[in-house]
Length: 335
Image 1 (tube, rainbow, N blue to C red):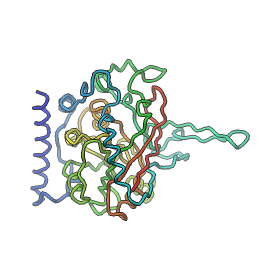
Image 2: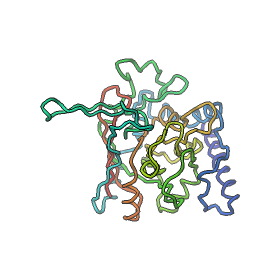
Image 3: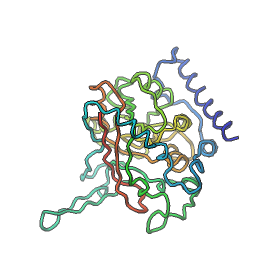
Image 4: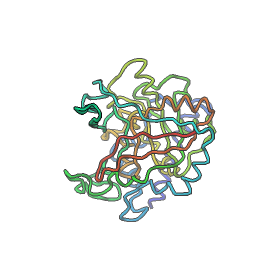
């Protein structure tokens, strides 16, 4: 039954993509970015149905705490190293910001020097929109349950009893793929609230000559940092370009390991009545997929364009805090 329902959801997404493309007169045209058409899921009831259809609960056993990290096999990591040609490295992290701004509360990062000026203290409040970080699988719940049907009560004032960030202590080594939507559209950045749909992703695959496959990490560039530099900071919360929830069956079908973006991953407002961040919710709580938030993808985009390729070896290692809900992160792309 679940396979049949999943197929039905995929058909709904594909049909919507074809209708949008047909209206443009060409399946190849990626002009759906920026449209405001209504797609499945449209509301919380439809999202709940999608969550059940796509869920990875039990896929890797009842006690699994790694989720889609299981898709990054030793063979996948080994194959990803073959992408290294020039050896050029690019950081995907934005330097922590100490100034208060609409997208960076004053408490998001603090740097205090010690009395001898040869030691210091860092303080991060990294969940939000100012610090590059990764979410642990205990960070989001749906209907009172965490990934793999773990009760929300597993989270206590002492930390996450299950699904904490320590489960990624061994590091992440796989193929990364940049999805550069401003480049696809010929603009410096997408405007806030711009949704990204399946046909946009597939148009970029054709443009870049890549095909997203099992165990990959996809990095969604909206141009958030380019827009910030050009126009100044704005309140990203509730007001950002990103993935529409209708892409979730595609992500599950392709067995994407992780998703990252330069903003909040979700388009906001979400365009799904009754839920603010459906992409975050289903990726983390449903698929068991950690999310890379607030990545700085500007140098990566420039390097990829210069090299003429948008796939690379991607490596990352969070701070393995036992029971942590995530970690500041500095992923490295190697060309």
